[in-house]
Image (cartoon, rainbow, N blue to C red; front, side, top):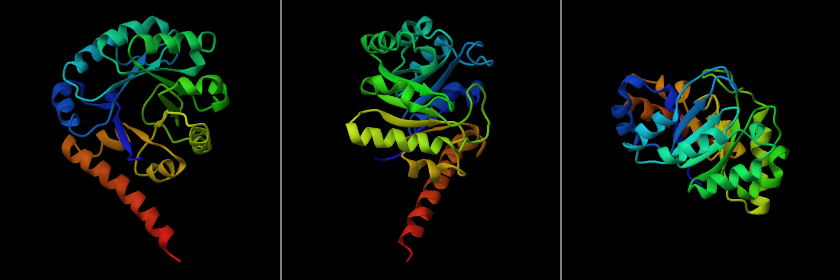
Length: 233
């Protein structure tokens, strides 16, 4: 599968939203939109109103990552605002997971789920067949710029093996420290969607056109290097 890239919009220049969205529309596969409530995580970032504004100019699917204690309070608002994927944290829906996932589907959105680093894949095993996307956090949630948690590589490999074994449809996505230092290992482990934030995209160049080209060069440079090494005797 061709690798896909999902810019994290909380890392963009919010004074240039329309300009940057128009640039990314020609390049991105998804937009990753963090919805934080200040409770599930201490930070507060984007909102349903932000989603509504982006939906007016976006040409790619909007993926809303619900870092909130009560996702059911947000699901209908975000669907009406224009979200494509709604991805609550597994840790917040363990008492009503099936109801929440069916509600997301009934609202016309695709079903995602997010797992914190310390949450095993077995936590969601009973509803893997209902998911369109699994997002594996490779940093603890709430803030950008954290160090990559290498133990997540095994969780990614497990998600890939289960997908192949059972024919599940979910995309495998990683959130946290996707950049030149990790692209190679993440791709080898089975990642299909890379969420790119400060280190992976926005801080590579002040010009977003140039930043995207640098990101792709870093990604393909790492992957090509790995393939070259494999061919050596």
